[in-house]
Length: 202
Image (cartoon, rainbow, N blue to C red; front, side, top):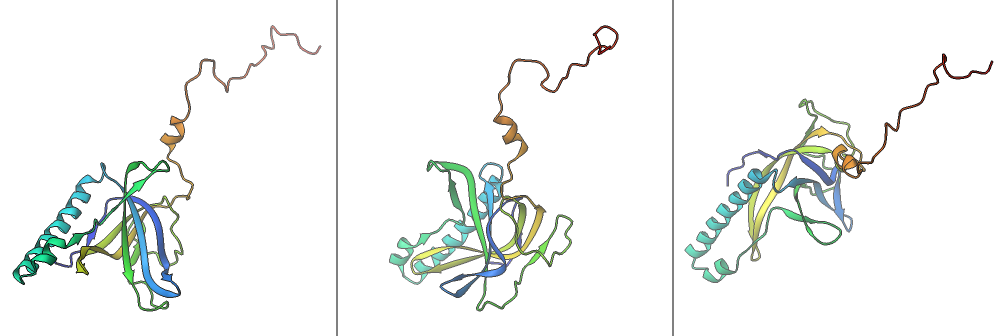
């Protein structure tokens, strides 16, 4: 498939390793960043990504059939490029996670992706992006097929920081929604004595 750079809609950042690569048992894996998108609000983008995977999967099936590998074609599993988010009750939410990666062979290889702010100015001194911050990600999708499985690798090429937020950030509308309405006057009103009718100290 063509190496075309694509960009995600604006979404919340999840787990990320952008300063130093992630490791497993001391061995380097690579840089990565997760983006949390909304299935309804970002439906068009998610559908296009799924359609891209479906097209590449169909091509792979045809290749296997052309080589008379009908058993492999029938058994080939396709992995979704996004993961569904569940709440604490185990219920499916409206959010999905996409993970973008850039693999490395050692712990000293610098990142080969660019980080910019919302004005497209390059950022070079950012150690960490707090969870809940809003970002976009530039990436190249790459189809893979190995060991009876297939899917899309989302190769990290760039991150745009739209808005830095504290990890405990809660949208204003969600805070307002927790309050009910109550009967009563203005809680901030204070009574000011009338100096012409109220008794004073003398």
